[in-house]
Length: 109
Image (cartoon, rainbow, N blue to C red; front, side, top):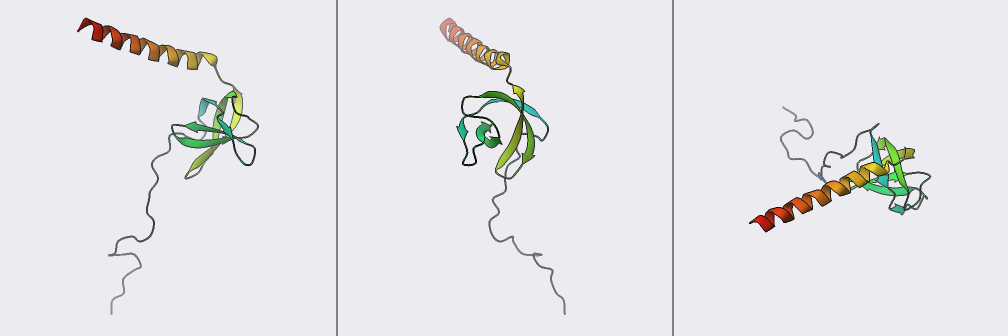
């Protein structure tokens, strides 16, 4: 008599939603703006859609954070300093420059 091991030869049952790879890494630093407050009083920000909890912050704070823990659905971080104002300003300038270039290309046609 031959016994099959559990799960062999059968499809997996249950909820197999699978989670996509996370957009953050432990130990990496990010400049973010805190958007809201959690029930526990921690600040909440989103990094490429991933909810990130940051203690000792409040909505509107611009801070530099370091990722300390990554879970299936969220991440936790700690504040390491103030966000660099230049980074956000540079990103906005790049977007404006790209928009201007597109407008100029359309006018030429």
